[in-house]
Length: 343
Image (cartoon, rainbow, N blue to C red; front, top):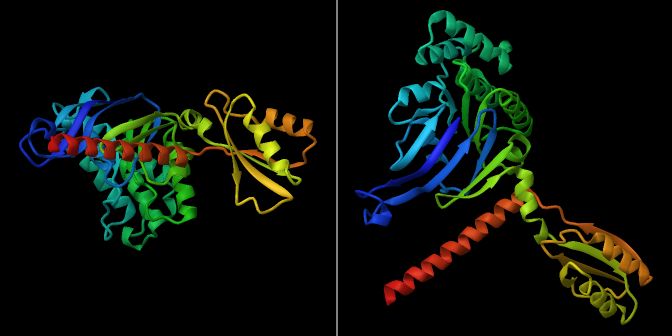
């Protein structure tokens, strides 16, 4: 439903920065395909290229290189046709506060080229789907932020597009409104392809089937939230708190360090508590979870254990690791470039 093939976008200069044009790279050789019926979240720090990528998919910006197809329509060669298949909600919802909700939605439907009868049906369906019946005759400017966001979403639905692209759809909403909007997006994703850009990671984790992480204009990670979390499970250690006797701490440390599947054991804290000690045990990537051998070992030693838990990684931790890795890569590239210039 959405095909992004080796797309780049740069601003300024006469050509590709890599080719000596001197431009600023916003998106750098990004490729991905989103099949029909999938809900995909786009994550990235500020300035990563998320919004630029979305604007190219919607046809608001042309790519500097590469090609984009939406519903098998090229966004350059058949820009109008591609746009007709998209419902786009930008971060700042475009509303006319002096218009009544139903009139505004009818106006949006006519802009999409719907005939009067089709527009009326589309507006009725959008009002029903976005829970706007109670405010359909009120002026948009009189509505709360949450209702305005619903009106914006309804405006993307009046022409029944097969693709929805939502940029920060819950920005500025309170927790209740966020929950309502999240529920609405999940409902809409049942029979549409949805692309959501957001900096609220729990929202993406709860809503989307797949996550794209963009940093410095490049696609750095792509997969289901659960799959991305599994990739870094080995990096999250186990916490063990045990009762220790004088001189027993070192013995326990050696026993834990000698277990198969363990690559490191550290004493947590300053070790001043002589009765209880907390250890952090890091497993190998292959082992991942070594709670059972830890428990068996401690029981065999007659050691009292009052805590044994494994830290569960989250999408937020995956995101931070990807971004930190990208920052290290950028620093290494800068050092290499500096060395080449000096030479």
